[in-house]
Image (tube, rainbow, N blue to C red; front, side, top):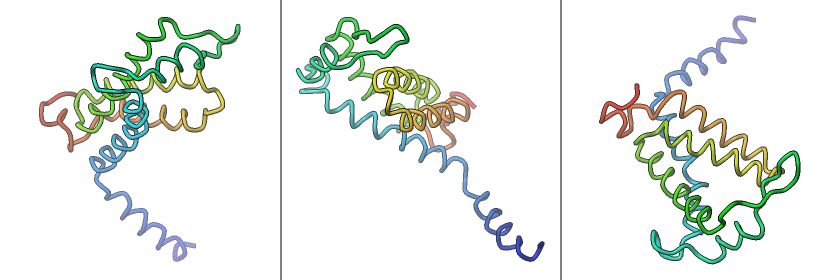
Amino acid sequence: MQTLLAPVRALSDKIARVPSSLVQLVLRLALAVPFWNSGVLKWESFPLKINETAVYLFAEEFKLHLPWGQVGFPFPEVTAHLVALAEVGFPVLLVAGLLTRFAGLGVLAMSLVIQLTVPDGWPVHLTWAAMALAIMAHGAGNISLDRLLGIGR
């Protein structure tokens, strides 16, 4: 049995040598992409004008699915602006590795609201939440502005 496990053990040892900073960088990039892509679609001209589709979606289409029923978003135009800013801002922070734990918390909060808005999307939302939690727990890593500025550990 030991002989059969030797190649598995050797591979496991090699995998364990992947620098955690590289893993943290890739995790930050992977989490930033879907939020950035969603955010840039909401702008007609950043940061001055949000497009009408984004406002329409928050006014008419998007609803929070709560235990007592569906509830619309308050102040749709303001909500659309704030969401669009967050969807662009948090990814920038994640990619730069700046205020990374804060950005992770912001993306986690957005993931929870998105889950309440699109309940059937839970497999993707759960993935985003897990990634955000890992970033919050472990920080940005050595390849980051946080490290350069001495923010976090």
